[in-house]
Length: 399
Image 1 (cartoon, helix red, strand yellow):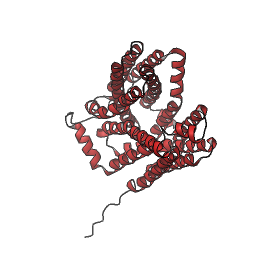
Image 2: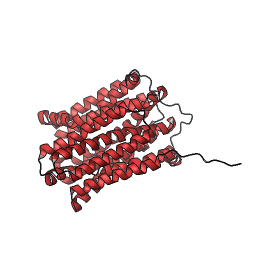
Image 3: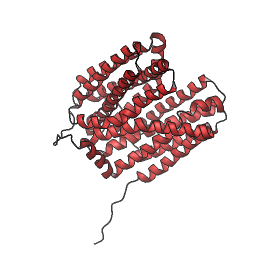
Image 4: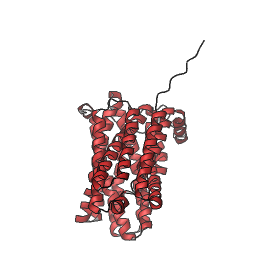
């Protein structure tokens, strides 16, 4: 793992990536609280989720198609600098609240964030793949993401409770300004050299590229199905803890923390034994996650439910980094940023579908059935991945 840290450009990208994920967690919590407190309605909260997740997922690929042929250093510095300005505006809005303006800025920030994340992932491939360190780089970045995912909401909640929402949003503005400065001075991010500089029709050409490449197409199918079933538990867990286990808020927090700890452990497991084939990791991650959901569904006590959450988190940590790395290994440099933007859009969009399905199943049949359905789906994804991702033998021509 120390080898990849010797690459100066990667070190700066890792710092930027870590600060970005921390800022994302803090900002999402602060903005969700702001919108809910000022509107006092579930409709306002739903509007925030749609504006922060779904709309940017649809808009981002078109912006990436216009930016991915420019030097990554300047593009990333500009995008993160723009996010700093947006969060500065949101901090002002917190004291002069207007729902339409707030949601408009949320859409803008989400659009910038998804675009920056796609270009940053492509830049990471650019600096690690030539050295044969793509897997190591992704493993380390995923571990950083998992830690920020676990501690970010707590940090955000602490800032909001001590200093208020405006302070949390100003902290985010400072974090994004720091990221912009870090990347503005990063060498080795010139980007791929393109012979054709046209941007018209590039988005449709990227879709055609994905359709032509069977491994890339298969990996997208696996990720779409996986995210659908893996995120079914999100709206179910609180109901499961309260009504099935008859436990309190602390138990719910323990369950979420167990999932986060499992995700970190999964990332560490992949980093330690990353030499196994990526399809093996993808199938294994889906299987472990599915078994974790099933254990949660049948758990008579909080202890077993927490054990199931740890298993599910481990599977999630392994699956996420392996699926993304496999995709990057199959994509040509000239299409990397756009394919990464499609991938980020899937990760933004599909959890909303999974949440809706999980909530509907829980409402109709109860939280245990919803968790069991998510587990069965995850195991089905493992079986499908085993088939879709297996190497195809070349046809033999008989003279």
